[in-house]
Length: 75
Image (cartoon, rainbow, N blue to C red; front, side):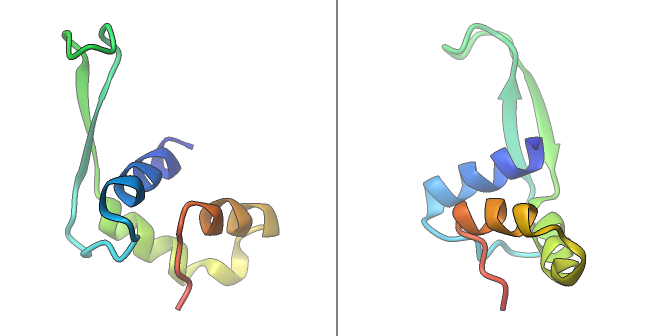
C-alpha cells in the first residue's frame, strides 16, 4: 500500500500519473508531522507505475480499481 500512497501523492501534486520511468518519489515517515525528524524513504515510482501497467492483466479487479481511483492510466 505504501507505493499506492506515493503514487497518490504524485497525482495530487502533479495532476496526472504520467510518471517518467526514472522518477524517484521521496516521502518522510515518522516524526511529528510538522517537519520534525522523520525518516526519508524513496520509491522508484516511475518504474513501479510501469510495472503495474505491464501487469494489468494479472492484477485483481480490486487492485485495478484502487489504482484507477488514484489516476492510473492503463494505456
